[in-house]
Image 1 (spheres, rainbow, N blue to C red):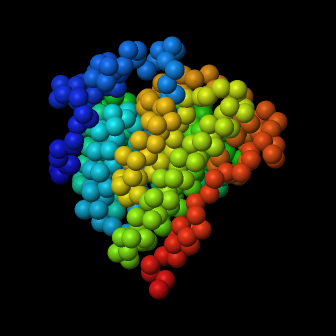
Image 2 (cartoon, rainbow, N blue to C red):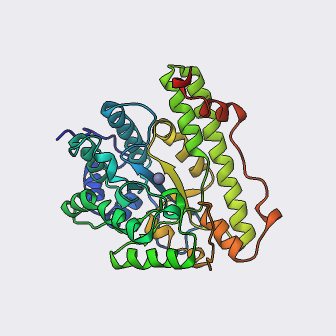
Length: 343
Ligand SMILES: [Zn+2]
């Protein structure tokens, strides 16, 4: 079995601390807090730092073009950035990607193992990424369980179990009955829903970035990356403002990203920008301790939207409340809409 070899370590964190982080993030709390001279652990209420959980979907990879070598390079860079930043991220797996042919692809399984070896967590994102809005609930549930087979095995070897489920497309059901039916099913199998507060059009920038790279237009790729990093900072500001307007205070955010080349190449800058806004990176379970996540949510609809907007709609907010979301520059949308194969 091939594995990604040596991952860089965070500055000031010695190997024994990395070893600790490979067991459980509960241990890593103490180790990282010590290494960075942080006086209190993440869970402490007296902290003034803002908190954010980094969640990354569509593992092992969501990329336009590319083979296993590219998937490995992307994973290595992404994990290096997360480990460098001491970010206790969680990755959500689509196990269908482990079977590109008839047989299980061990190189792809090794990519998931690399996440665990880096001390990170894995969650369930369903097997085949079905859309709950056009899949019967019973069928969807079978896909959820099929989606944990390999992940559960890998987690077990690390003394863990899968704990979080992320809805594909953030589609949570076209009725409260379906939504709650799935929640009940997930709970029976030990899962909590993984909400998102900072949603974004990252997938458009990521695909445009892939298009530029497939055309070997490094200059265009760099322009897209710059625009993306700036856009993501604006999006964070937008959602901070939305949280303030709805709840009257900053909240512990959950950011949605995907396992792609763009994030692998920009993760350091994205983390720097979040740090500059005063954020510390916490595990998803810590972010979810914020009472904001208990806000009433009666949202039913076709759109896969941020939980912040679900809470706002449930609270009766409409129209102007949502303001104008930041957008990517026009040229990024243009490159996105123009795949290399069409020329
Ligand atoms: Zn997804």
